[in-house]
Length: 231
Image (cartoon, rainbow, N blue to C red; front, side):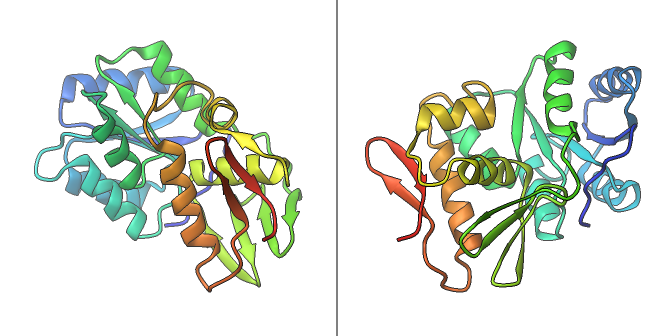
């Protein structure tokens, strides 16, 4: 389920138990030009994800029968690479970290506000990347069209936020980037406050790009941030 859509009318799947909210979200998306399908439980959402091949999935954390976190983890385990946004009622640090650990790219807090939600959707579905452009650092290559990394001829699938973080690091090689710079440029706003969102994603990236025992490229600068450089 490797989905990267550049369609003029991207497909969005909304998985939401509250049918009134689901219909509202679906209507707002359709009025904004997105092709939209709704599912009201995890099983239906999984089925629609396979059939609909969406460019983006919106999941309520609280679903009937299975948590939205479990569904997100299931989708990632199946190889789904499209952005996943979670609808959440709480903003505690443990909730934010659980969101990321499940493989979600971002979250939106209830109560639902259409303008802010659509702004977030547009952020993840913008597709102005030149098809042939690549970034290179040593033996690491990042393809900006497919949003995949390659190292030693090994293809590395990335979630949207993993891609954005690695892209930012590779655009500033050997430059020490502070946590504040990374938050502002990758998330665009104070997504996680004082929590460890960056550490979580750096760990994920390291696991993927060092999977075969390759040298560590993302170095920690204690008390400051991170830098992409060869050891």
